[in-house]
Amino acid sequence: MHVLDTVDSTNSHAVSLSAWSAVRATIQTGGRGRTRDRHWVSDDGGLWLSAVLPCPGSRSRWEILPLAAGWAVVRGLREFGVTAARLRWPNDIMVGRAKLAGLLVERFRNDTAVVGVGLNVFNHPEQADPALAGLTARLADLVPGSYTVDDVAPVLLRSLRHMHAILLDAGFQVIADDLNVAWAQPRRVELTLNGRAQHFEGVFQGIDQKGRLRIATAGDGLCAYDAAQVALLRELE
Ligand code: BT5
Image 1 (cartoon, rainbow, N blue to C red):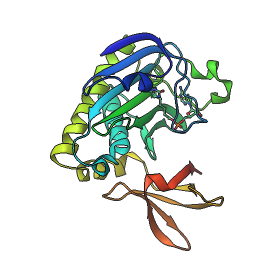
Image 2 (image 1 turned 45 degrees about the vertical axis):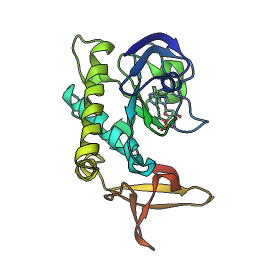
Image 3 (image 1 turned 90 degrees about the vertical axis):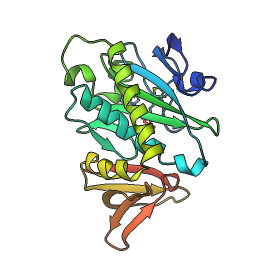
Image 4 (image 1 turned 135 degrees about the horizontal axis):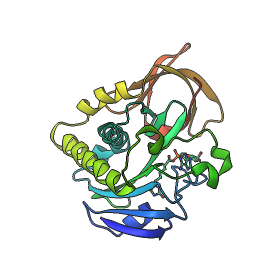
């Protein structure tokens, strides 16, 4: 584990690290969200962590990693005493409608993936960005006690390692079944597909065994979409 005071993005820093390394920083000056236009507020007191996981075999085999990593972080948080967390597709960790943690999984190399986790712990993201007021949750408000950010990181890393072992030994099916409970589905959503200007409404029905998003619409019935096809999923309730 590399520990830094300030870095632009722990995910970018992790590009040069080998498998089974991790890096965390007190502050990120350029914390990244899942798209170019989305910034991740990374003020002092939060956990900004990137882990490098080996990805043996074909690239397609690891396409479900972003979903599996969300599952691992929820499980790690449960172990830490968080009971109220749910997942919002693909891997946001929510408490009600407030975001507790976000994940950014990147494949810089064929043989490894960088799993970036941003978790609000004692920090105040809405002070750094007032637009986030009412939209964020913090671990400190969910789990009282005298712990530090240093105590949280190993719990999440252990859970990521466990998830990785499951993917290698048993495959994604075990995780998919569990994930379909962690969404707290079904709920109405608005979906925008890549390359299409129109969005449409449907009911989120979790994921199938290949990790594809399942949406039921009045006109078309149940359809499955690869994550790469989806530009935006917005929860309506
Ligand atoms: C994410 O993107 O949720 C991925 C966030 C990943 C952050 C980690 S920190 C360690 C590693 N290094 C990095 O540079 N990144 C990773 P996305 O789904 O695109 O959501 C981004 C949106 O979340 C923003 O547009 C804001 O609306 C909101 N947001 C920003 N900062 C937040 C925070 N601290 N807490 C809750 N919501 C936040």
